Amino acid sequence: MGTVKIKTRAEYLLQPTVAFTPEGVNLGVVGLEVWQRPEQPVAQQRQNKPIVEKESYRWLQGYQGACAFKQACPATVVVNMADDRAINAS
Image 1 (tube, rainbow, N blue to C red):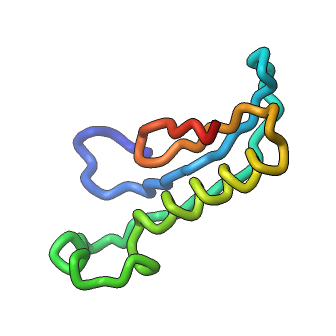
Image 2 (image 1 turned 120 degrees about the vertical axis):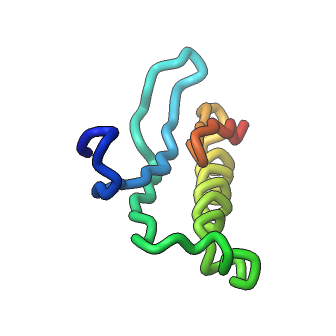
């Protein structure tokens, strides 16, 4: 949201979980996390925080949700996007 020259922007992070049929037909989004990072860098504080206060905790929650959906619908292909990487829950 903005140009490369502008250092401040309203950056939104998105972690979707999407379901597909075995044939690859998209069934839709079955889980979603949207958030913004704090304006001040927190990298130095990260190692002292408990996991539930870290951004990476969203990855665990998303993966657990994808696994729960997969268990309920075993024939469905479930994909969870976390940290720019796709995780297949099958």
